[in-house]
Image (cartoon, rainbow, N blue to C red; front, side, top):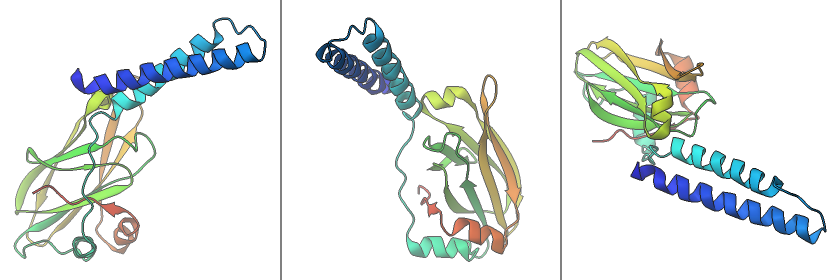
Length: 195
């Protein structure tokens, strides 16, 4: 609950400022606005608090160095006996909310849209988990995707959000690692994985 306090405070301040500003505007114009300033202020305050609560779980990720990004675009794992896992996020829905990525229950990075990250993984079976924090986490179903990697493999996944009636869902699809993928990733910011 404490992580939502700043969102509630800012929403309240927006409501007070907008209501007061509109009431002053109408009174200086000699018009009787009735409850309009209060209603508009309350709606904008609630909307602001809602958006900020959705973003409460979002962290700033550290951008990868140009060398790190180029190594990934060359499809080079960190070590020759490992595989390279690339995850990128696209789409407009929820693009400002950070989606947390974990591999085998180890946090890797948080991605906004459009961003990508990459890590070297050992050969064998792995589980990629994706979920949101903050209020966005309660509105979106987390996703788990299993994959098997061999030494030298490049495993790439694309994550998008799809809106649902009750809950949104994260849709993950495996993407072929080819020149089209490189062209898609080039303009994106790469987020460095956490050590």
